[in-house]
Image 1: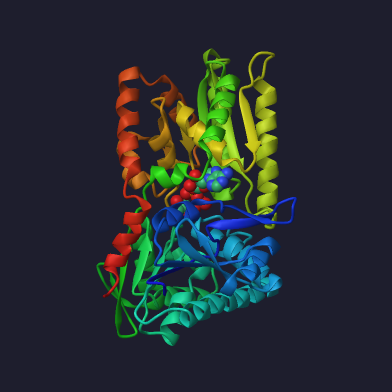
Image 2: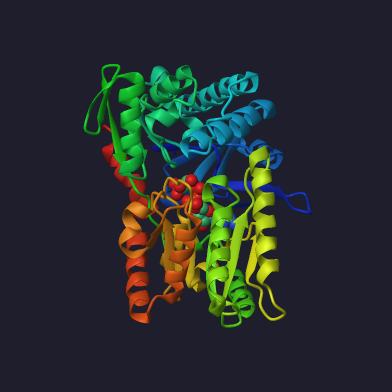
Length: 473
Ligand code: ADQ
């Protein structure tokens, strides 16, 4: 069947690993984009997902399947083989260091960024990889098909596709924040213009919240001096629609990612570790924007101020390794571990482990911990949405309270039933954690029920459907 829907993202839904017998086994790709899009495409036989082969085993999997096309949960996947050096510059330097930092306000403008030869080469690689994706899409797609590009790795692809195939209906969804125009100007002018024009090659540009959509529109006005009317941008004689499409949680596809027996085992292991204490939980990729160190310091403040809680609470930080090729991330992981060790050592007793920082890729343990927490801390510096803030409340069975950064996209929907924090304010975050622990029973029940209802939101399949509906027909 020829695809009626093509989606394209850097990371695909599966990553491959060689088993001891030499065969290839597939496992779920990590991260929020895979959670959202994997849920949306479940059982869509008319869909093709194009992604980059990330490892030598992925490349082998692509080679061993005819036309590089493989099956995943009811839809097809095609992996693109990109030369390693080019991929490294596009992914590790331009996407994950440069654009990610700009979009999450992670630079320190007195010193960084500083645009030199490496950055210029990596911008070139970014253009090249975007061109490869655009070509793969244009060469394999029937007339008039909807193409949904995902995320900041592929910001230039929409305009490249439009030049080659104006018949295709193109959307781009930006999963992360979009910065305000002043911060965007930390990029060289030529790049910020190219990026905005690249995205405006689409018919529809989607964000999780009105906050990021508004920043994008203001940047278009400011940097490109284009005309806009509410949510429509006039660009090169076309009208481009800008919308917000918050993604919610589909419990079935979320829990399908793990064997229920493994989840049960992990629940028993965590319950055993807690020994009746309250569980304060965080779940993150080891990612600078997730603000892990300030979160741990906030817990330390709670223990400093509240000796009555010693032995009554334990904090579990489940961290999935991420972007270990980027130096800032390696340093940050070391800092998270060191901070965790220091706090644990400071307060631990023979019978109480106050804090455990686990760095592992263990999805069943994450699902088990979601069910069990009393307090879930989600305090990113900035975040497009943050799915942990939605999945936790939906799966929790313990009247858990959500402590949530006001700079997470999730805040715009969950604020009525979560405790908000300014992510830079460690003392304020500590106060919110304390308040969550101390909340009277009746309020706990009311807030946990409320946040679960709000967090479910629009399931990924409906999130995608809404965008497809808003594409021109
Ligand atoms: P991320 O920053 O990667 O996503 P986030 O929204 O924080 O992701 O969610 C993390 C996801 O990883 C959750 O869906 C969680 O279930 C999953 N996960 C946790 N442990 C895992 C493991 N061991 N293996 C596999 N998956 C695991 C980006 C943006 C976010 C936005 C999402 C979706 O940065 O702001 O919410 O995309 O659009």
